[in-house]
Image (cartoon, rainbow, N blue to C red; front, side):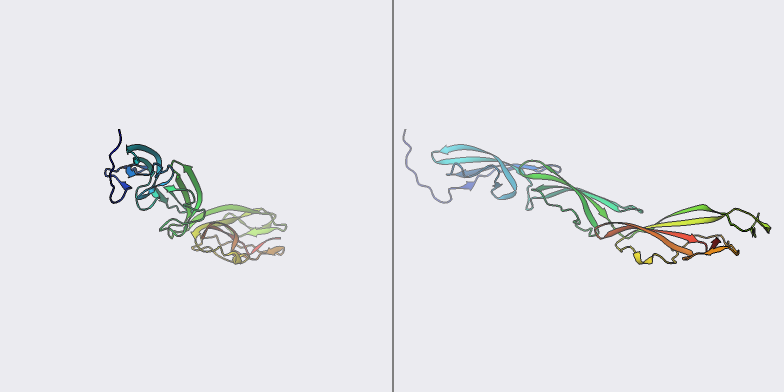
Length: 270
C-alpha cells in the first residue's frame, strides 16, 4: 500500500517530552531521552547527550515512526548538571606532632582532575600526595585524593630525654654535692645529659644557619647547678644550651621540623 504524500513544517529533529533521570549521591546519574529525527544515525554511543553535557550516551534504541522518520531512545550515564564533575565527600584531620591530613573523593569525566602537589579548595597549605583513579563507565572515573600539610597554626610538640653522663677523671677530685666527699679521691660520677626535641609544623623553612652555636629552646627545662673544676680539664663550645641537630621533612610549602637541643657542661674532665 502506498503512503499518501505529506508536507512537513518546522524542525524535523526535536526532543520529545518525558525525559527521565536518576540522580545518585555515590555513583553515576542515569537518564533516558527520546528524540525525533529523520537521520537514523543522528545519535551515537559515546557522544554527549544533547542538552546535557555531563551525560554520555551508552545505548541508542531506534524505532521507525513512519518511513524516513525515527524515534531515538537514548540511554545515558554521567553527572547531571552544569559541571561534569561531582565531589562525593571530603574529610580533614588536625594533628599536633605531624602533618595534618585530608582526603577527597570525586566522580569526574576523564582523568587528571587532581594533580599531585595541588591544593584543595579552601586549604592552600594542604598538598596532594596520592591520587587513585578508578574507571567507572561512560568515560567517568572515581578519583580519590590524599592531602598532607597544614590546616592552621598549631603549637609545637616537645619531648624531653634525661640520661646520665658518666665521668671518670684521671686526677683525684672532690665532690661538693649531697652525698659527695670533701677530700680528693679517684672517682667516677654522673652529670645529667638533658636533650629537648621540639617539633614544629609550619610554613617556615628550617633555620639551618643556627648550627653550630649556643641556642636555648623556648621555655627551657631546669638544669641542676653543677660545675667541675680541676687541672686536667676540657673546655667545651658551644656550652650551656646548643642546637644539636635539625630534622626536617616537607610537603609542598609546609615543613615538619624537629629541633634537638642539648645542654652542654662548660668544663669536663680531660
